[in-house]
Structures are given as C-alpha cells and as structure tokens.
Length: 73
Image (cartoon, rainbow, N blue to C red; front, side):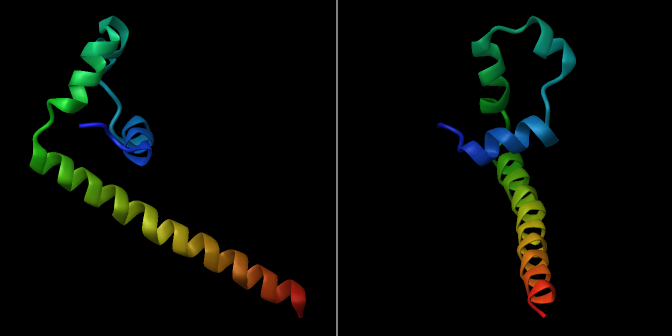
C-alpha cells in the first residue's frame, strides 16, 4: 500500500526511523520499516497527525483573517 504525501512528511518529522536503520539500511529496508508497522498503530498515528494538523491549519487561517480585518480597519 502506497503512503500518502502527508503521511510520509509527518513520518519524517514526527516518527523518524531509528538512527541505526537510517545509516545502514538500503532503500527497500527503509520502506519496509513503515510497511511492517501494525495496522492499528498506523490508524492511531494517522489520527494523531490529523489532530495535529487540523487545529494548526484552523488557527493559521483564522490568524490570517483576523490580520486582514485589523489591517482593513
């Protein structure tokens, strides 16, 4: 199963590979590291990503709207 772009980016930032694996592993071993994770763990991880991204995006866009309103006054 191919991982989405958001999952790859968030994995890189929030769930990096162990240093030993990052240094010595081939490209296939690195890909299998994430493929081998348990399905329930993946679902939990995706839920955590969503819980991090959604409030951040909402606050960001609200900040832009409020800034535009203040500059417009």
